[in-house]
Each structure stands twice: as structure tokens, then as C-alpha cells.
Length: 180
Image (cartoon, rainbow, N blue to C red; front, side, top):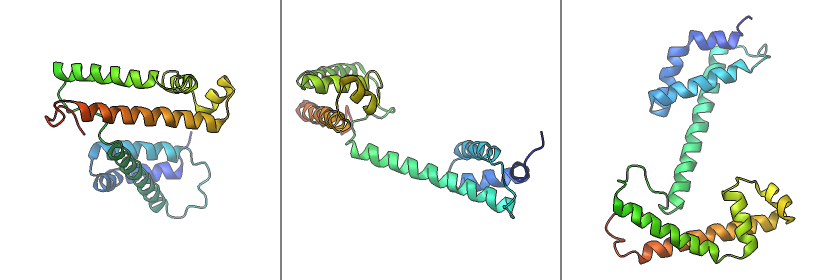
């Protein structure tokens, strides 16, 4: 099988691409991952007869992949910030106190779920524990998509409020045992 002209251009400029991506992304490992994605993407390009400057094309695609990655990571950061620190960071030490606190919090959240209306609990269970899509849940329960969406939103809002109440009521809430 003959290699495409784009893959040949990739091979000719691979080290330059790696340096370009590493500088743009701030990580050699991440640059390597994006370069691999670029290679796979170039393998899928079948008609490249219109491309005059193969090097520019390859670097343009690399730049777009890096930009997409940075955009996704930026959005992920915004989502984590919006979650109000509800996700514990992995660097937090897992102590017996933290385990006990987590068990207490889980019991508190389970009680909040138990207080939800039956249909809302069913929708939440199907979505969270059976990984069903909203469309699948609507079909299974004979509901409209909007109803499923509202029930999921109610469940998530209820859990977030319960978590905030639990953390506000915690006696050592200022001790740094968890992230606010």
C-alpha cells in the first residue's frame, strides 16, 4: 500500500510538529498524544489532490487539534469550578476520618434520593446506574423527553443542595478535610 502524500509530509516534519505542539500545549507527552491523533486523522484523508502546501496543511490540522484539546480542557476546568468543589481532588489524603465523612455524606445523599418522587428516582437510577440515555429512559418508562430531562434535573439539583447542606452542617467544615 502506498503512503499518502500527507502521511509522508507528517513523517518529514514529525519532530518539528512535536516541538510545535509541545510549545503550544505545554507538555511533551500531550504533544505526542495529539501528534498521534493527527496521524490517525491524516490516515483518513483520501482525497488530498487539492492540497498544495502539505506541510502547511499538516501544521494547520495539528493546530486545530491542539486548539480543540485546549478548549475541551478549559471547559472541563469551568465545569469543575462550577461544581463548587464537589469533586474531591485526587491529591487529598485518604484518611480514616475522610472515609467516615464520605460514608456519612453518602447516607445523607441516599436519604435525599429516597425523598424524591418515585418516577424521579426511577429516572435517576436508570440514568446513573444503568447508564441509559434520556431517550432510552423515555422509551422504557413511556415518558416524554422533557419529563425525563426535568426529573434528572430535579434529582441532580436535589443532590447538590443535599451535599451543600451536609457540608455546611459538618462540624469541621473549616478544617480542610474536604474541598469547598
